[in-house]
Length: 150
Image (cartoon, rainbow, N blue to C red):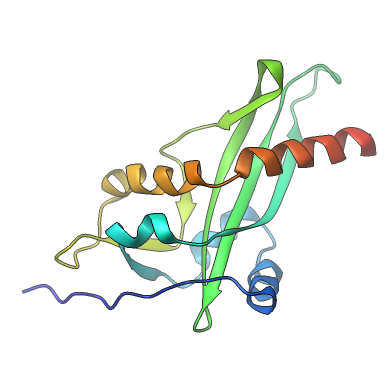
């Protein structure tokens, strides 16, 4: 019989988010954070905040579309939770997920029986979290700052 993991509520506070942001030196570090077990039905209630966005240039001059990655996270009980993904700039100034199946996280989503979902099973739930975030606004802000800096 599978043991059900306890439900945890992660909620940001000013000091805890600073601690999470200080842990992040690169987007891919999120997967090296200690794993956090999280009930899948509670996943949409995560209160993630923007930790950082990096803009990458492909070459081809100023007119070439950019890409990059963005990191979101929170902390509770001394444990950091985060999700990061790559994005691409598309025509008309819009940005989109580069690959909806390539979200990196230290969240291990659990089904009702307490079993860890496979990455393929977790992907739709993680995408639901991502699509509820104002991440495109943050990416556009980073693009604007990058454009001014150049």
